[in-house]
Structures are given as C-alpha cells and as structure tokens.
Length: 119
Image (tube, rainbow, N blue to C red; front, side, top):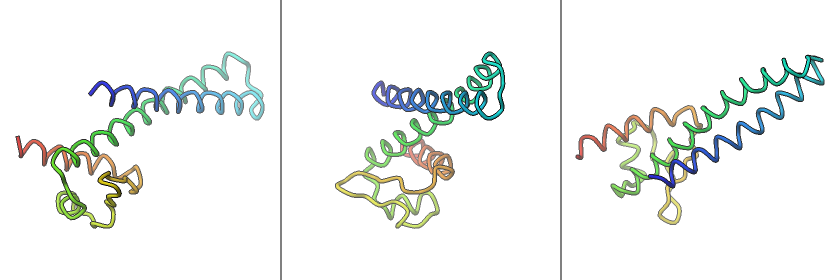
C-alpha cells in the first residue's frame, strides 16, 4: 500500500508543479497581475491539480490491484462494471486503463463493491 501512496503523491506533485508554473506564467504575462496575486492564483490551481492527480493515481493503482488480486479477465471486468470487454485490454497480464479518466470513479466503485462482496 505504501508504494501506491508514493506513486499517487509523486504524480500529484508533478501535476501541481506544472499547473503552478503554467498558471503563474499566464497570470503574469497575459493578465499582467502583480506577483503576489499571480502566486496566489497559481497556488489555487496547483492545489486543485494535485488533488485531481492524486485521486487519479490512487484510482489507477487500486483498479489494477483489484483486477490483479482477483485475477479478473476483460470479460469479468465488463460484467462487473457494465461496460464492454474491449474497454479493458490486458497485455502481458497487466490491465491497461484506456478508458477516459472520467469513468475511473465508476469503475473503482464497482470493483470495490465486488471486493466487499468477496470478503
């Protein structure tokens, strides 16, 4: 579980750093805001993108963990989530999350429910 948390935090920090740099550059150069106002706005954007990326990182790791732990095939995942089997390609015994990230919470919720039923 510790490795999962580290991945999500690093993913979130990188995303936040990129968001902070981009937002501060836009605020300073395009909007001609003062430095404190630009830093404040960039910090808000960075915080938002950290939280978003952190959740996505955790969701990705958790979805893959449940699929691996229960040895779920693409057909199993499709049946559990109500989606198509082609949405869950498995290459070299690893699930590839090719679905848009907006579907990940739905998938994660269905797989967590599946896991609770099995315990």
